[in-house]
Length: 112
Length: 119
Image (cartoon, rainbow over all chains, first blue to last red; front, side):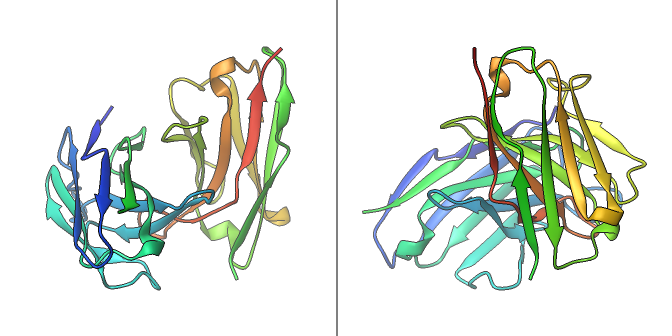
């Protein structure tokens, strides 16, 4: 199985400041179809997860542009340019290139 | 508006059975792959099972293979998860989730159904 490792596991951020989460996979997520199957989700407290980013860097419609994804191969990053109170929750990366699809352990983001 | 609504959760004894349902609306169900994802209390997300748009392809995480069965009824816009011979470690919130077209990202999720396995 592909292991997804997120760092840090928790993050405390002052509103308006940037935040960054790293996700590393145990094998390349670049598929022969040319797509990289790396996704980011946010699970807000008491809610279901929601998709933020797919294909490394594509924001789902409606996701604020303060969220951005980058990376390639096995190393990926989610950045929030200016954290807002509504961004609190647990962020998960996930790989969709090989079954079983697997998630990172999650990074909890809270506001200082 | 896309909606996924799970039902059928509850308390079940070890070794028992339960069937979860996911009723969908707001999109053409028969053109989307679907999955079940679970989350044990206080833990992270775990993909459990997937089914292709026509039901012809299914796959499972090893820990549930042979005990949990995913199915769908495109005429009824419904997804199912039959849970047999359940174990304590199956205790989780179970989410149904829609696959994004062309990708395996889950772009819409239900609100979740809690399954508790306990005697």
